[in-house]
Image 1 (spheres, helix red, strand yellow):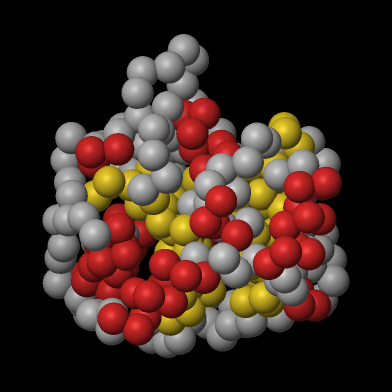
Image 2: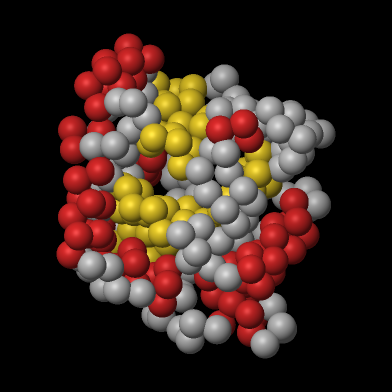
Length: 270
């Protein structure tokens, strides 16, 4: 999928680009089946809403050696419709996966994600430059009632803000301080709700301020995130690095594109 000059300009200006209908219903069904299978596992890569609650985030499904490994996810990160998009917005061909994650907002129980920048955590992984992008793919309808993403357009241009460690939800992360968020919303706002249908996608810059609310609906809301980094931007050595399922180590093996039907073949449905 080739982006137009106007689409690339919009990504650079706003920090994100919406891509309706990136996956077809059959591919969405395969990924939903894999996410459902992995969500039943008791593994380090599956973080839950409390000790016995539903999953909030699942990591490492693209890694063959992970307890959460999925052949379909391993294919997804290398499809022309995914890898090529990341290569275009990053203006680089040699990419690897920093991590993949599935954010699962269970009905009623699915908690919020505070305002944050992904690079707020990723810089602490030893990554020197914000030459990174994330492709989010919806597996369910996303709306304001069930905790869709909110973006603050243009907020990426100021770079990374000093972050604070937030423990208010089940998965702890580095968030943007409230006083900074308030000022940025007044400057760049209002935030944009990323309402989507299954198979819709959005690319977004790692310094874009984003958040999502509680799932107040009767249905789950599942989304997949593919986080790409340039191989030249590999993490520097740091003390006590995070596990490979969240801080990728495959920068010495740039991702190679595969046939666009590979996801269905990996699932044995083609």
